[in-house]
Structures are given as structure tokens and as C-alpha cells.
Image (cartoon, rainbow, N blue to C red; front, side):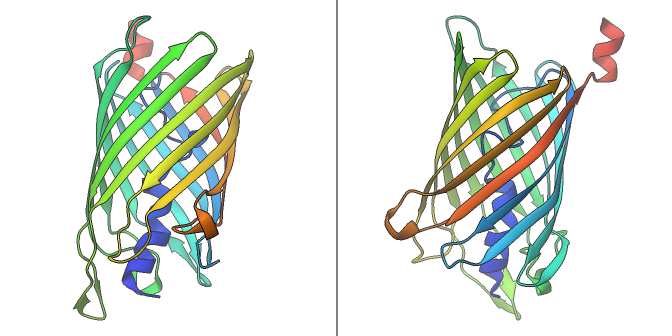
Length: 253
């Protein structure tokens, strides 16, 4: 496995999140914990699994939150911890009846995965993202524009060329029942390896509240380019979301 391939397999679980998975556009009420798993087949048919996937979210205020996420990665008969991600998100403009909410986020990918076993890139990457969200009655539109500064990795002592990555997503949520939402997402990811195809793919899924603070969510998706160019051939995600009040919020009630 090349260093670039190792990076692609491990980072897909952090850079790309289905709408049904752990990454809303704007702030959550206070704090949350996500757990789940993801299966994916690349354009070449190479399978990878993120299991378990865990994301912890803490709301510092009603405008800013901190995040930490990490997962176990299984790829090419290897299993171990992949690259972890820490980040923060800040709401610049809160959503109202007349305007969308706008937020910005910064994420730092840490080289916690074993590069020699294909479980990480061995480098730090930096992601900036602009997020927006607007709800009209039973329908919500979610948009993201992101740019990742990719550090050129080394493999076998040789520096590999890597390009910085653009990410564009447009997601939709439909409130079809009191506790259930249907979801869809179209996303574009520019190539990271010179000469490789860009990715254009879609996901569909659902969210369902089991309890007031516990929800199940799942999504399935694939490339929508001819011949699945850019991948993935298949992408499946399922998980649970548990929300709880942060101490500062509980004290203020």
C-alpha cells in the first residue's frame, strides 16, 4: 500500500461525513457523543471499515463547540487506530426565519495511525470549512465548502506528491414524521493524488429518535460518475447519537 492510498483510506472517515452521519452544519444544543461504523469500497474495489467510530462534542457556549473523533480502521488485513481529528466550530450568524445560519470550523488531523501498516498518513493536515443551514417548515438545506491543506507524506523515506483538497456538499433533510427525518446528500471532493479523478458522489439515509436524547442514523451512497470514477463503489454508515446538556447549560437553567 502506498502512503497516498493509506491516507485516502484513513481520511475518508474524517473528511467525508454523510448527512446521516456525525456532522451537522451548525451547532448542536449543548454536547453529544456519536458512535457507529462505516464500510466503504474504493473505485478499485478495495474495502475498508471504520469500526468503531467515535466523536465527542462539547459546546463551550451557544456559539462554539469543540470536537474530537477517532476510529478503528480495518484495511488490507490490518486493523488499528486511524488518524484522530480535533477541531472547533463557531457560529458567526445564527439562523432566523428570514436568513440562514452561517458557521466556520477548523480541524486538525493528527498522525495517530500507524503509517507503516496503512492506518494513517503520518502527517498533520489542516481543514477549514464554511457551513450554512436553513430550515423551512419540514425541509432543511445544509451546505458546506471546505479546503484541506494536505502535508506531503513520506513513504519509504521518499516524499510523495499530494494536492490540497476542495470539498463541496449539499445536503437535504425532510421531516416525514415527528421523530423521523429522511436525508440526502450530493458531494464533490477534488483529487489528492496528481492525475487521479475527482469524486462526485451521493448518499441517502435517515435519522430516527428512539428517545428524546438518543437517535439512530444511517446512510448508503456511491459515486454517481460513469464507471464509479473517483469512487466510492459503495459507502455504508450506521450509528447512534446521544445528546446531553453541558454543565454550563445545566447550571444556567
